[in-house]
Length: 401
Image 1 (cartoon, helix red, strand yellow):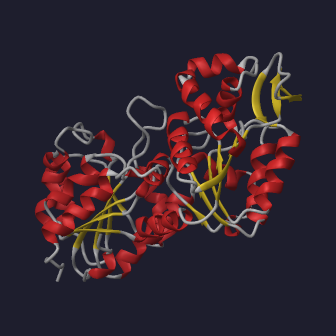
Image 2: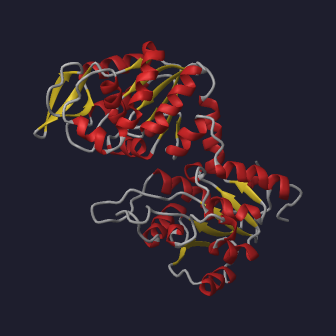
Image 3: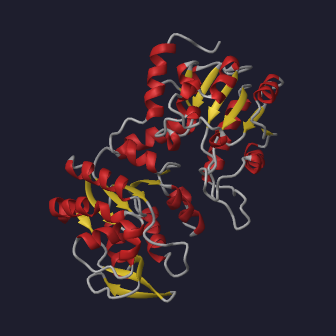
């Protein structure tokens, strides 16, 4: 894959796909976060090089509460870049072409949420409306987000059928970090509730002996506790409602094959009428499991402090609820204090680091990706990465001169 650094950018129209999907505050407004910061910095680099930067991004998904316009994201990007960011709310082709046509060197233009286009997720992304509108005046397309590279959407792969394309600085750094974490002994810390993705990487890395151990927390650990034959109290209904029980067989097979390498909580933090109650993992009678227990925190922390490489994806519990942030905070602090090469991934994990006040600079690399990170590490070729490689074959001789 080519890097954006291989191209002369001054005066060129560059369409850049970023990921500025952000958490919303209580009033429904996007907030400054690592994605906004890092992508804002990468946009500024292109602007400083004299490119006319046309930014594509999304927020939420149709039907969800956080599916909103990118109007306020433009203001956040202005804060990070220190430059004016023009926002085009219209999805009218003529208005978009006119806005692109009047751009000067260094200008930044943010288009409306790409998921508002009807054919963003269509069967033929290279024939989508947004690709047809922008391709005639696009000199270079830059994919700069691993976090969307697992989706075969128009704004991710559509342009690469038509114009020279490259990876941006954020994507380049992500891939470099992920390739580094895959070498040598690894302690894999998995939390959250994405059982399918987590089980996939667990099975692959334990089989290939890339991971020396897996430390489980979050809803994922509740699933494995149930698979191991433990009563999980009221959390059983959660497992059932979220469809996690369909992965119980796979969880049981992993425990049977690699049981000595899979660490389950020995105790848990139960939510009983809103209060935290400690209980042994094999003696849960009532309440919901909202966190790993204090003894588990100690055991996990001791192992992580002596680890060589650590990959963590997903929180240890319901850190958003007071009293149940303890496990997530303790484990993140242990990773930060260790001498290991540490890679942190997943939107909830990143948010937890910020909200719990764990120093970000103490982690080797904080990935902006969640599911795409897991899929990449599990060996799956992501559509966006595949399209970049194919683009090199077709447009390899072309340069943006």
